[in-house]
Length: 276
Image 1 (cartoon, rainbow, N blue to C red):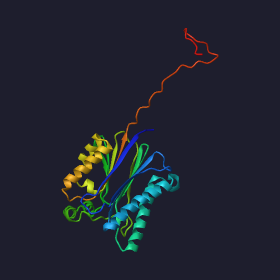
Image 2 (image 1 turned 120 degrees about the vertical axis):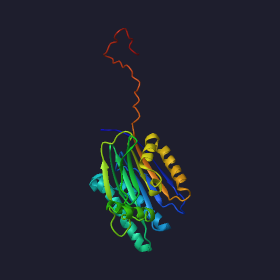
Image 3 (image 1 turned 90 degrees about the horizontal axis):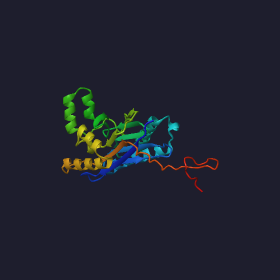
Image 4 (image 1 turned 180 degrees about the vertical axis):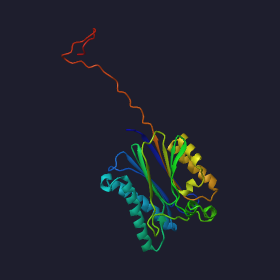
């Protein structure tokens, strides 16, 4: 069984908005030893509504991960589904009671040993890089991406320019979210995951992000990504939130000093003196 040292970090920045509505968290649980849950949520729906929605995603993820054992829920896939379902339900109930329309994206990753599983809805992304190259990237659930998938290229280009924030799936909208779940086993040393909101990925191409995560530690990469995004936003940037999870080789086990032990019934050999 492969063993790794998992190094992870998070970063947030309010950008040029009046309020931070992006949330990010790294969560561990006694019920899931040797596992790490990373979550990014981008809230929308007015100032207080957007933050409430993203807060709910994070609090639900923490509660479910802490309380639900994997054996109770039928596996990590069901656990991710329950996080999304419960957060969606609570956000919908809040929307009805407050007469607001809060909703949120979600991208959530669980890494355990040499296995990873993730889920997403909306346009917050997960990237998986290996050896400085992109191995996987989630597909944005936006109106523009929907048109592109249908082959309506011109309409998609127009939507990408003028309707880029219109989502076809998210937590808290009237329809149940179209949660997409994927997984990978046999992870390798050097594999790196990036979870981020659109306030981050809008300013980078895939190869640039791959190079940053390959050559830098998670903390260094997060600092560079936030700084570059802020520079390229030119004082018109959205909220930013990201989490980086990188698998590194474990530190070598230190060898303990050896000692010669003598027993009462074992005589010294080769002229050695027996300790008193």
